[in-house]
Length: 121
Picture 1 (tube, one colour):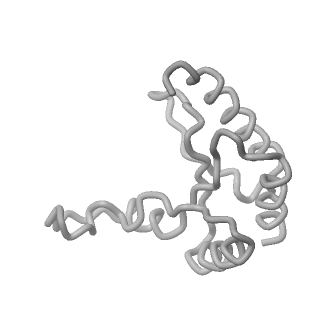
Picture 2 (picture 1 turned 30 degrees about the vertical axis):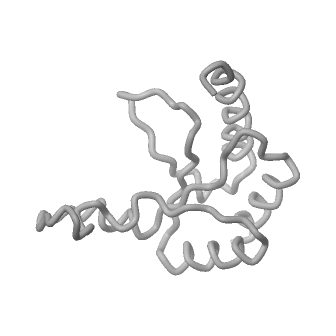
């Protein structure tokens, strides 16, 4: 894979940019930081609420599309860490954030299906 990283990253960047340009503006709430670079491994979107996220997952799954929840549950709630620290922002966002499929080889037709589903929400 290391020999192909440049090609893989460029492919993911194209997919990422198509999502950015084609998805309805209400979902353009991606996580960004001035302290990091984008490696195009994830395309997270934040829904208004968890019900909307769950509905979207259900519709996508019915069409053989399997997006992933992003850091869910909030890591402070994972029992293996035995942490009682309250992290209200993380807890709130973890219930509403979803990563869209983004992988080397994702075809435009498949991505269009994802985009169309989202834009109908």
